[in-house]
Image (cartoon, rainbow over all chains, first blue to last red; front, side, top):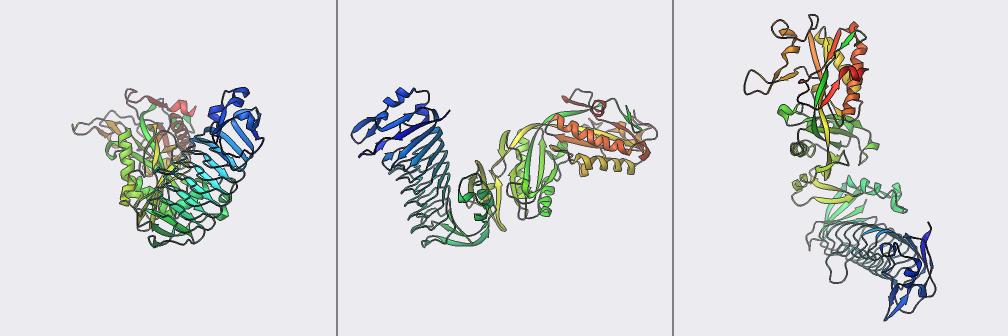
Length: 270
Length: 298
């Protein structure tokens, strides 16, 4: 059965909340029911068929075509199934997703995968600030799952992150891994200032030497046995992380943030 | 039944339900993985006094281990889950955590999860680090040679313990040579261990004793020096008896190990002094698993 496809007809001026278009919500619905669903756009409500041409298909396999950066909340609380976004995604992509997979062929906005619980999110372009972070005022960011970003990410990636893995092939902005409680963030490119600011636990795995604040202490060079296992677990990904040649087990270990619990670590490839 | 001049007794080995687990020990090289595995499976010949029965299942190629280093697969059997978990943890803590360059991984994915590194992590005194890789939790415990990496849990499964057969020979060297030949091939069978020293036990026991404090005592019916003073099972030409005990994950695993082991003994045959193969049982009253020798060799 082919995918349930939503092709955007035009680009509305106001942002649109696409959270109703998740697999578990559309499963079992007829095309007329789906067409009649209403999407919040500013103060107005838009019928789905007013905004999209719908090609009926498997609700567990959703495709959004011609997507652009004002389509927010795509895949919110997704619980199984897959969503493919052709183009850019707006803010809150995959927010609180519980399982399943989302792939965006373009860029994603703020708070992508914020408070994500499980599943896989792949962004082929760049991601905005607070990737995998916590919503403002909340204390728990991403709690599980895997995020892969092929481009660059904004500031505060992994803010308040508790579990899970964020893989960034490009660069990360300032405050990467800030207030992390646990989990792993790997950055192949450069990292910005205030890396791991106030992190309590967790691992920041870097290919390039970062600019570290004074509250990170050098623990020396080490060969760590868990790293080959970690890289091996990326083998099935469509990513540079899957390339055996990019893996390593020899690192310099910095512990921090000593201004916090100080049980976190920054591992830099040697 | 007679094979190559060796009589296969019309009897059966009687085995019991046990709980089992498997762990994989890796190290910088096979030598140190084996040292750690030998320590972990030491003093674990019989549940009668050791608390568990343990043994090395096989050596693992680096391509077979989770961290890509040389490794050894060990199995531990106990009468109950609590005892198994305690033995596993104690042995892992004293014999693997302490062993240079070692790491410890689950050898059984299914079954009931029991702690492997889950509690050993507290040795890290708060400096331990958890990592979830591929859905499995591992603990990185800082130790003086670097980090001890241990998977949080391994699986506990129902198993079978106490499969056995007895090799009756004209002399002690001939009995031992036959048992060595059997062990060599039995070690190639997966999912089984032969927990006694070198896989062979020379002090088979019967249930009970004339001494009240003892629950088991020498199997006098198979002791060659007692042929004239007890109700012996031995003919006049049998001068030595040795036993191979097998614990396995399933009855079929033990069947297979017994078959290849007994075949190796029979291959040596009467020409090498092997007279009979028999088995230990308790009349079928104690254990639900019966391994009939002639059926296995049919």
